[in-house]
Amino acid sequence: MSKIQRIADAVEMGTAKQVAVLVMKALNEGCDPTEILNRGMVDAMGVVGEKYRSNEIFVPEMLAAARAMKKGVEILRPYLATGKSASAGKMILGTVAGDLHDIGKNLVGMMIESVGFEVIDLGIDVPIEKFIKAVEANPDAILVGCSALLTTTKRSLRETVVALNSQPFRSRIKIMVGGAPITQAFADEIGADGYSENAAEAAELAKRLAGLV
Image (cartoon, rainbow, N blue to C red; front, side, top):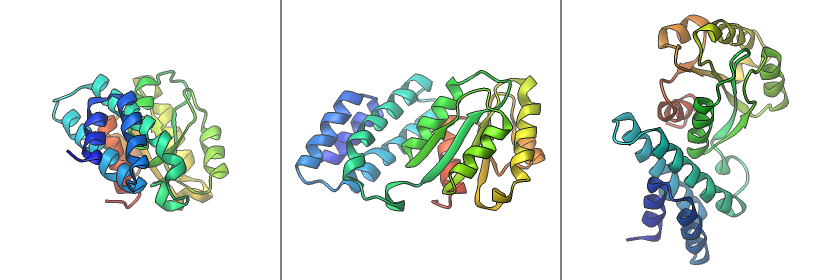
């Protein structure tokens, strides 16, 4: 079994400590950092996402795999080239005003990080103005993710997306929405660019909206 395959297997199993050891060993033995990232970790998270969608694994296993990859990326980061090759792009993420749920948002953030994006997490109960200021402060941001986990905060999500749609920066960002009460029809109605039902789908959606697939 190759060094890269061992890393991929460890990511899929969600063994963060083993991933850290294997990544450092591969680097010390001359493996290409980009190959470790793409073939050893990003591809492995793709497999994890497929298994989640087909109900072979569930949220705890997916979360463990995302954490394992995050540990590997921490070790890899100093070895990766700077610039666009080091990141698929930047995303602003938050749960909308009035909503204090963060588990789903956190999982989405980890999955999107696992496919190569830099995620700026604004947290929970995020007012519209905070989303707008975050995009303005990060002119290289290409995605904005808004989460609503309550039926009562669908209105807040609508108002947030409407406000983002009216900003001068709208042409340079894609808006993703999700959460338990949200549907594709609602996403279309409020003017979002994409909707995902779960964290695995969110990672694939992020790549599509960023033009990476």
